[in-house]
Amino acid sequence: MLEISSLSLLAAIDSPWLMVLIIVAVAVFSAGAIKFIDHLRKKDVEHETRAMRERAEQDIDTRRKEAELELKESAIKQKADSEREMAEVRKELHERERQLDKRDDAVEQQQDQLRKQERMVESSQRKLAEKIEEAGRRDEELTKLLDLQRQTLHELSGLGKEEAAARLLEMLDQEMTQQTGAIIAKHEKQIAEVVDVKAREMLLTAIQRYAAAHTAETTTSTVDIPNDEMKGRIIGREGRNIRAFEKETGVDVIIDDTPGVVIVSAFDPVRREVARMALSKLITDGRIHPGRIEEVVGETQKEMDGHVQRWGEAAAQEVQVHGLHERTIHLLGRLQLRTSYSQNVLRHSIEVAFLSGQIASELGMDPALARRCGLLHDIGKAADHEAEGGHPKIGADLLKRYGEGPEVVHAALGHHDDIRLENPFTVIVATADACSASRPGARRETLDRYIKRMEELEAIATGFNGVHQAFAIQAGREVRVIANAKNTTDESAAKICHDIARKFEEQLTYPGEIKVTVLRESRATELAK
Image: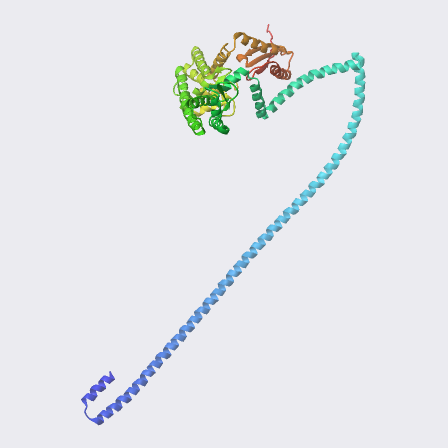
């Protein structure tokens, strides 16, 4: 602003001296202004420096106070931690002191008990010594008394030593007979624990005692061949055809010197029939190799399934049983290929169904349910080659699985008297089963042979001492023996039962098993007058 004013003033004044004066005045004024400005700037710098110093001092005071507070807090925290650790240490020391006190108390109690036991042992030893001494005295007295009694008995009875020994042996023999029966019963219970071994032995015995004709009839089938050259084609190169056929069908193919036939052997009748049909098709077709064998066996299996289904449906329709599960019908049809004691099982089941229905009608019960129970009572025989256990249990499990009622399931499970017969339909089925099985001619057995076998069973049973009567029932599958209650005991009755069963095994040849049941009953009768 001063420079602008000076220039304006110079422009207005034309005098040189005045110009000089003005220039000098302006220069002086400018120097003064510069000094004043420098003075102001110096004051501002001093003011700012003083303000900065004050702020720095305030910051220092603040930080010092904060540091003091942090130090105090840290000291307080360390003191609290120390006090807490000390408290824990004191608590732990108190706990250890308490445990030591308990241990001291326990040790003192144990010491007291040990002292008591020592006193009791000493007392027991004294008493034992006294009892041993007293027992020794009594033993001597007993020996003297026995000698005196023996002499007295000899004098009173008039028996010599040999006669007394014979009498004693006779009494021992009677006692041992009773004990033998008890031991037999005990061993029978123990045998139940090793039932698998016994089952194998029974199975082997049953197989060995099969009649040769019956075994061949129920386990083998024959297939006619046009010429002996066909046998070589059935065997194949290095036996590959026959191995493939046996693997696919699960049967044994027997090729021997018999002209014109090949034998198919298997215990499963369904597999055997499938193998027979498949082999007949292969012989007729003439193309015999592993691939063709697999194809023909598969087709035959499907064809057999259709036959089995139709057989089952026809049987159910014949006895008017409806609403069966599809799998149940299939199992029923498989019974057409199964025989029992040379009797066709499907025809036997149909006959039992009719008999059960007639018996139920006479008793005023449901004949339809009775026919259903009778038709399905042996259904387990269709699967006993595939599952473990007897056919009643297998059949009951299958029927329960396929939705049959409790009456049908119980009839299948108990128709051989294996369980307590609580259901009336089970009793009806068991009765009808016995009628069908025991009918002369039902199992390819003549009347004379049937009667002779029953007489043999009863004669063997009545030949034992203590047996009053014997009755062969269930077509010879069971023998009921009535023991004399006066001449036998429960133990000796068990021995008689065991001896009769062993006698049957030694003297008779029979398929399956014979159940021996000994009944002993004592009665007391008195008249009130």
